[in-house]
Image (cartoon, rainbow, N blue to C red; front, side):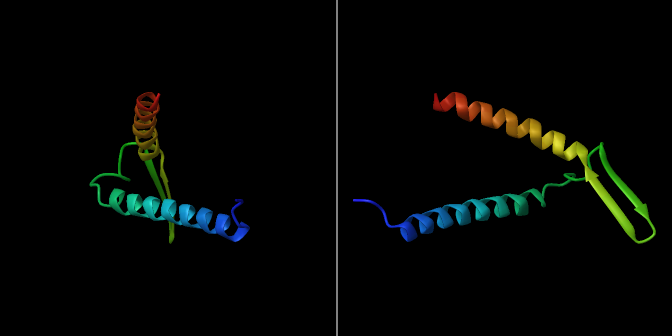
Length: 78
């Protein structure tokens, strides 16, 4: 029996919602890690009342950590 179109859309919306909740929770937890966002390589430019923040060092660190974790997960699933 084929699934109804609204039922299929509902399942996708629930999945996307759960993913957004997980990402939001992760961001809340990462905000509490001391020093994250103030690593060497994180650039801050201030001119008057304008502030530009480029967390290059933090992005590199998170990229390396996530790459290692995802590689371990993919190898474990094979």
